[in-house]
Length: 254
Image (cartoon, rainbow, N blue to C red; front, top):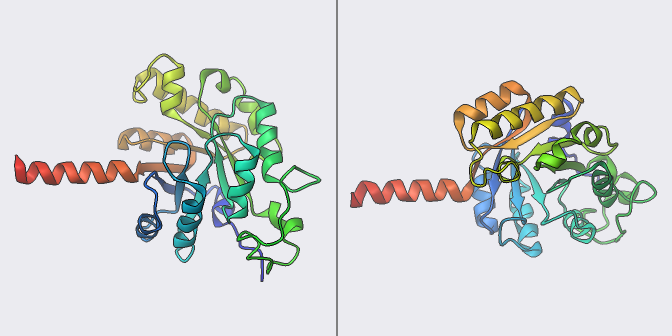
């Protein structure tokens, strides 16, 4: 059996726009439903969602038959958590709160097998199709896609260095946390925050790496794509559910 190809990583290398959706609702049924909706990628979140590792695996399995790519976000830059997500078959990881070049290097080491990194080896995992992929440990690094999140004022100072780190495949800007670090908690749409996000996207692209973001404002999303985002998350599952439910209740209850 051949090593599964990471279509998302290939698209980033080709600078092909990838439109995505954030998944914060645990469950394989939700993941499968969203996988058939036409998004290029889904992000299975464990940082700000109650999704545990076994549930992530069932969500990856549910998305697998569809053309949509499933990425995963660990709760932090935790080498053990990262290793376990990779072992259950996640090929793209978005690592939150990477502040420095040294932390970017730690993230790279966590997703790579030795001698390039420190990922621990296990023979029978879903990632290796339970041992059926020949020479999995020697080839896995080829298809792992590492995205790091830059989401604070101090981290913004290190964009070029992080972008130059070998093994970092893209940089994601988190507007919500950036807004808080700028003194505007809960205001990702503040003009100064939006300007900072747009500047960061341009700097990432100028440094030669794909830039990504999550935003809910359609007009701002358009600006971000023009500025150069390559992987752009345009919504969250919970927001879509709440907005639809509230609109329905309002229609019938007044």
